[in-house]
Image (cartoon, rainbow, N blue to C red; front, side, top):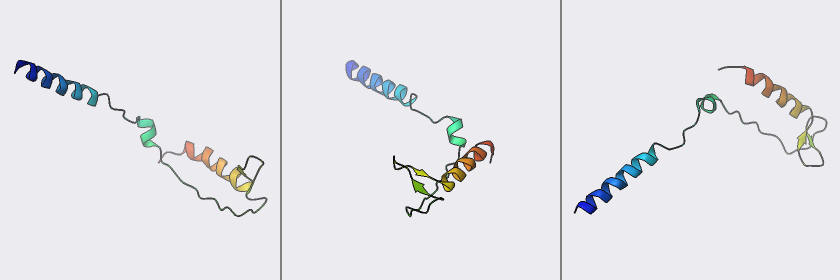
Length: 76
């Protein structure tokens, strides 16, 4: 009976201590807002086309990069 009680206490203590080790997100990541942008797969140079590595490039991508720079400075 003592062995069962000791084992049960040890198991509950282990579960509670591991529960405290759960990974929580930092406040920095929690405060950021994700904005998804859809791109058309239609080739429309010079606005949007792909390079040799099949990465989108063009005026649209340059515009999105500039928006990303400005959005990082804005606090909502």
